[in-house]
Image 1 (cartoon, rainbow, N blue to C red):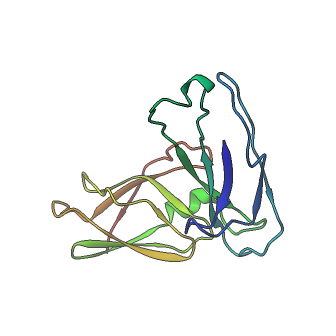
Image 2 (cartoon, helix red, strand yellow; image 1 turned 60 degrees about the horizontal axis):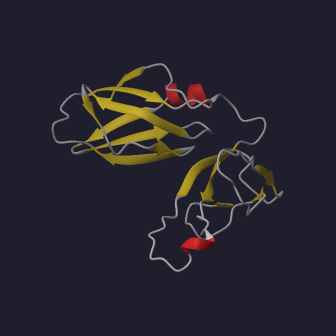
Image 3 (cartoon, one colour; image 1 turned 60 degrees about the vertical axis):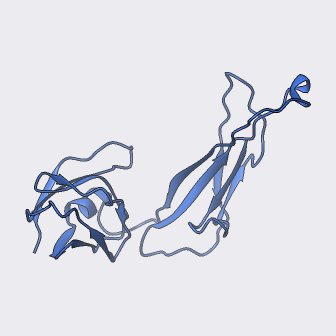
Length: 174
């Protein structure tokens, strides 16, 4: 197994050290990873997003070295949020206080909070918005909506710090 962090572009390493960066994982065994911040500069007024990557590298048994075998390498990529101390508000308030504005075949979502908001679901009326992923702190994202979404009522659930869906929130898009 190989593990590392990046900044989202897949090339630039994140300001973390993952230990162990390379290890063997035998069948039915477990391995913990330790993620340590290097102290590099990050935004202090908002959360920052990085990614934890874990790649499996399958072993080759000695008796299979001469055989034609298809091996698959799996890469798992997880969001890694760095949250500075003393940010105003809470992630739950950030989710609740999103602002929505409809522009024809798109909807703008504004997040004025210092926290990332990651959607579990987003619906216009009863129509799901499949491309809704997340909104960065203190930013606005514009998302295409399905042509069947005629309603202005917006319903959404966010993913909490514990990986669960939040309570349901409702608003009317402007």
